Length: 278
Image (cartoon, rainbow, N blue to C red; front, side):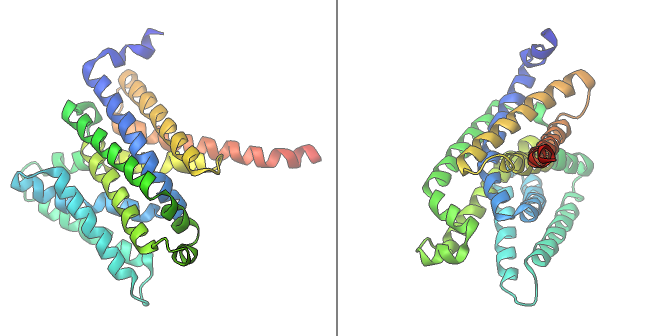
C-alpha cells in the first residue's frame, strides 16, 4: 500500500491535496446552486471571463485575486444588463461577453513577454505549486461561502425552483440572484489561481451534477459533491504522481468521469425494475 501513501508524504503534494479538498468543498457549495439553477454556461463564461482582470493585475503587479473578482463581477453585471433586452436571449448575452472578455484578456496578456506561460497557468493552474498562503485564502473563502449559503438558504431554494413564487413569498429573488452570483464569483476567483479555470469548472459542475442524480435534499447534494471532489482530487494526484500526467487536468478528468459513472449507475437503477417486470 506504499504506492497509495508515498506521494502525500511529499510536502508540495500534501499541500496540493489540502488545496484540492478546500476547493472541492467550496465548489460543492457554489456548484450545487449552479446545477439547480442551470447556470453551467454562465459559470464557464465567468471562469474564463476573469482573464482581463487577472492580466491587468499581473502586468501592474497588483493582486490577482482582486483582479479576478473585479473581472468576474463585471462579467456578471454585463450578462444581467444584456439579459434585460427582449431581443437577445440570455445565452446570447453570455456568449458575446464570454468571447469578448476572453479575447480582451488574451490581447492584454500578449503584451507580456511570458504570454504562453501566463495563459497556460491561468487555464490549467498548477495545483502542485500551492503555498500555505493559498490554503489560507481558500479557507477564508470557504468560511465566507458557508456563511452566505446558510444565511440565504431559503431565498436560494425559492429562487432555484420558482422565481415568481419566491417574489410572492417576499424572498427578494433579485437580491438572492445577486448573492448567488457573488457566491459563484467567490468560488471561481478564490480557486482559479491555485488550480486554474479547467479544474475549477470541473469541480464546480461535475460532482454536484453526479450527486443530483441520487439525492433530493440540497445539503446532501452539497456534502456528496464535496466528497466526490475530494475523491477526484486524491485520485488525480495519485495518478499524476505515478503516471507523470498533468495534475490539474487529471483531477478534472476524474471528476467528470465520476459524473458519467454516476449517470450510468442511475440509468441502470431506473431500468432495473422494468427489466425485472419482464
